[in-house]
Image (cartoon, rainbow, N blue to C red; front, side, top):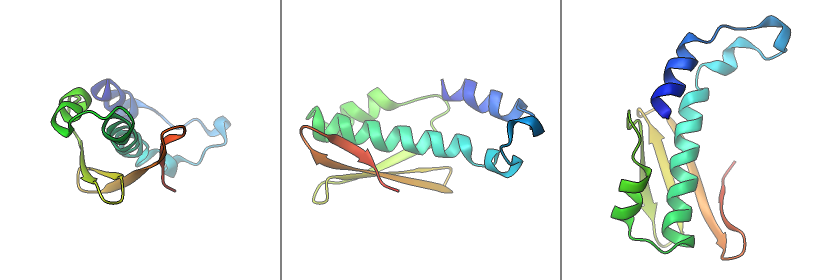
Length: 102
């Protein structure tokens, strides 16, 4: 899935009629990859109660550009893509689950 998004992102051309500045495309795929890894990793570990290794295997995509780290004390999962973009998700409660941090 991520591989397809990377290919489509690289092939995308800026449409001036869209009103979206072209510079927003530069890291959109890295943001998507890190947000997915952080949020789903957090939900898998802290909401579903699964083992970290199982969650890593469940969330592995090809190419595997986003790696996550778990802070069990803070109940936070932070992921990095290609050493550049970083995103975190934190567990709020069993009812609300995990949310991405701004």
